[in-house]
Length: 272
Image: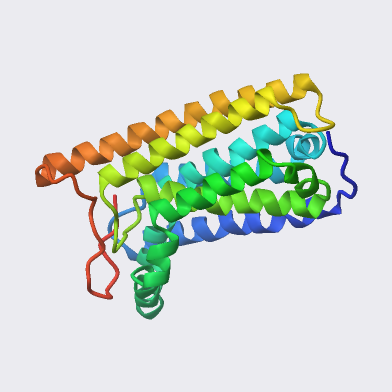
């Protein structure tokens, strides 16, 4: 596929992942000291798993192979764009921040979450367009070779996948507080559309190799993208259905959204 020179960048990428782990664990410890309710252990496990999954796409053997082998790159894409975002979302980092930050910064964060720009960026339709659009730009057009030709661009593409993947997953099955959570029906429709676009793109990768990509590599990458994406999609669907069921069971059928963020600037009660 594409050969990439330079390996010094990988060592610099250790810092953000280590920092993400340290800050989260420090927040958990702080919460334990100052709050009566302990932070759920499974959320910490989810955060660690998400950071490790994302790091695997940037560091180590898989990251090295992803720079010149399409199947390895597709595996890295699944880890950083789908698996890691789901785990990070389930770790509820915003809720943890609201529980551990001092009152003034927590209120500022709550106001930011209620702002119109955040509502637009975090809307399911916006995140879906960004997710699907970037996937088709990278894998469905001749720009694929150019985007992955240099190590720095390769890493930036993965960072983009991580950010967009997190925003999309949070918009669909987020458990952190949200002031303008959209209806379950809309989220289900958007999720179905994104999964369909992802499946079509996987078939395109499988059947129409990019110039210079061996047919066997293209077919393997297409299968990884198709079936790997389906496995994570099943988890997202199950979580969305469970959230929808709990909401309709406790509030009665409205076809509407999940719990909303309270209008007060005071941080909301944490999720368990």
